[in-house]
Amino acid sequence: MTQVKNWLQRPAVILVIIGLILPNLAFLVLYQLGIFVPPRTFPIVLYLLAAISLRFLPVRGVILIFLLALGCDVVYCATQIFGLAPSETLFALQFIGQRDILSSKLYVALALGVSGLFGLLIFLLWRHGGHLRHANRLPLLLLGLVAVPTDVVVNTPRHSNFWLSLGRDIPFESAMGKSGYIKLVEQPNGRHMLVVIVEAMGRFADPKIQGLLEEAIRAEGVTEKYVVTSGVNSFIGGTTAAEMREFCGTRDSYLGYLKEKRPDCLPFRMTKAWYATKAYHGFTGKMFDRDQWWPNVGFTERVFGEDLLVPGEKLCGDVFVGICDPKLVTDIAAKFKAATQPQFSYLLTFNTHVPVIVDQGYHHLDCAHHDARVPEREVCIMADGWVELLQGIARAWADPAMPPTEILIVGDHAPPLWYRQARDLFTPGDVSWFRLTPKG
Image (cartoon, rainbow, N blue to C red; front, side, top):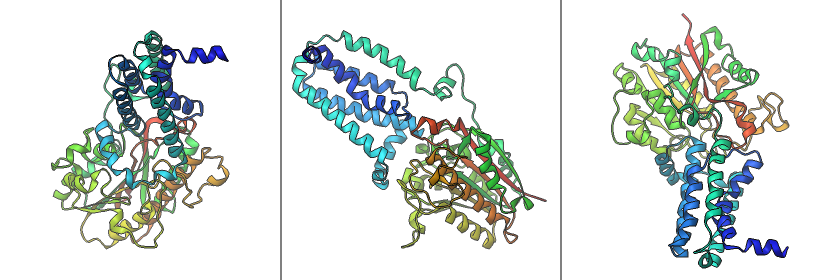
């Protein structure tokens, strides 16, 4: 024990602990627990450089650099996990107060764990920083040269855009194009139109699980009035990227749409065709500033959670709490029945936003007792929500009193699940889409 203690007190060893082990230990533990860890090459290098800076910077300055590196690590991981651009991640941090983070035990445990590790790191720096100024940096550099490529190989998914982008461009796809729905924009037929972008509705790898969604959208007798087709679509990025993909046919960030109108986007084109354009979202319009840029892509009327909130009414969601998606489907259906002008409406759902903790009680699947059809509980609850949404759409538009409506339903991105086993239930890089075309 004495030899081990003496070895741990060597300046070169302490430098390795500070520069490589402590900043990355939480992620090593997460990986061993089966939790998805994104490739973190950039943060790892930052921590190594912070440790090396002890040679010429005061301890307080090095502590500040480590804290800045931690901030970069958090932002970088968010971009990898949730498919956001770095600028979008920084922009989204201002809305952190609108999320009930404490409802997620994993988020709380991760925050406490990282805080504890960095508390220990700062303690070691404060206590031993002066002795580390002339420590041998070769062990740290050699181990860093091993850690960086290992991180890339181990943590980069096989179907990641990183690998796909090596040597070739990733082709642009949209459900608008693949389903043929875009032709209705080019040549409107006067029918109502509804586009639904479904939070985290990826494509199940198992056809039997995917069949649950296929059955749901064909339920309630809707096939007597509609031809239902389905398919798969590739995606890049998060929810706002999906909105840009489907409505504006671009991979540009929504941040470029905050102040400028984009008349080439589909809602503007439908307005010129004398359609009333309206967008619905059960969460706040302040999230990702949709209340600012939705008008700039052509939605003349916007309805957000704060516009629909009724005291005492049931709300849905866990970390994100707001209006229940099925209620919005009912509201839109009622508007379509009463409309005297062709409608182009958009529903952005959000009840299945990760993390999904509480079962909303739809009970299409027995998630409380580990439904064998969907083995992972969180995925089961999400699938239960998708089935409820799809069946609700089918039920509303199967109504004989409902005017014929052209409907497109598409996922924004695959769910950014924490557990690798849960992620493996989905086809990497793909989302599902469904189209309902009136017969006759």
